[in-house]
Structures are given as C-alpha cells and as structure tokens.
Image (cartoon, rainbow, N blue to C red; front, top):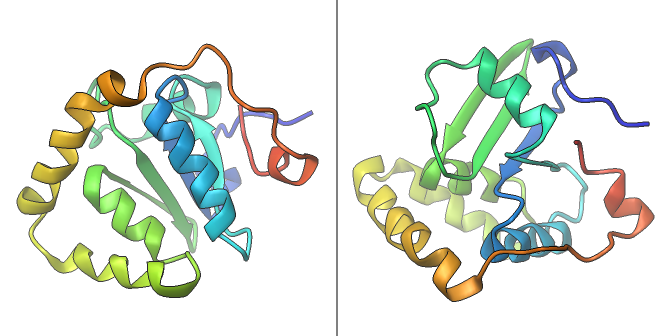
Length: 146
C-alpha cells in the first residue's frame, strides 16, 4: 500500500502535483511519463492526501492556487514551485531537447506566468474535465502517490 507523504523527509526528491480532473493536466502527466526516461519524477493529484499534506507545510503557496506544483527535496529542504516556474523546473529532469525549456526559468516570472495563466483559464473548455483516467501500467502506478 502507498502511504501519503506526511513530512518533508519522506517526500520524493521530485514530485509533480497536478489537477487530477483536468484533461490537459492528465495528458501532461502521460507526456511526462514518456519523457522522463530516468523515472526521476513522481506524481500526485492536488485533490489527494499527499498534496494536502505538502500544502499544509508550505504557507508560502497561495491559498486556493489552481496550478501545477513541483516539489523538490534536497538535503532535507523541501521547495515548492508553481505555475511556469514549476514547468521549467520539471523540464530540467526530462531527456532530449525538452531539457532546454528549463532555461526559461531565468526569465521574469511575471512574463512566463502570463502565458501559463492564459492557458490555465481555458484548459477546462478545451480539454474538459475527466471522470476517469486511463489505467497506468504497474511501472507507472509505482510513480503515483495518493
């Protein structure tokens, strides 16, 4: 049985928190599973126990934030990034040319978040909401937290 992450010491080194009912987010997670050949990323829905435990530890994350979050743990320190910052830091762990997207993290967040917010605003209209997700393979299932 997989247990929710209750403290920073048990948080996976690289964790993507995503909207579990968003069609775009689901497609993005499937894409990340394909592009993360090293298996460095773990995933948990924002609606789940793991995300709620992490958010409770991080008051710096805006209340009610409706965004992808990327949680990185290094040397016992847990850091949370959201919106475009999360995406660019996730890209650092991908293979091939996708890693180059991580360089956009050096641009001002107010600029890159503008694009993120525009897409986030229309994501349900274009990609819809999910009632169900595809069944992950056993290897993929091991990369998900509740």
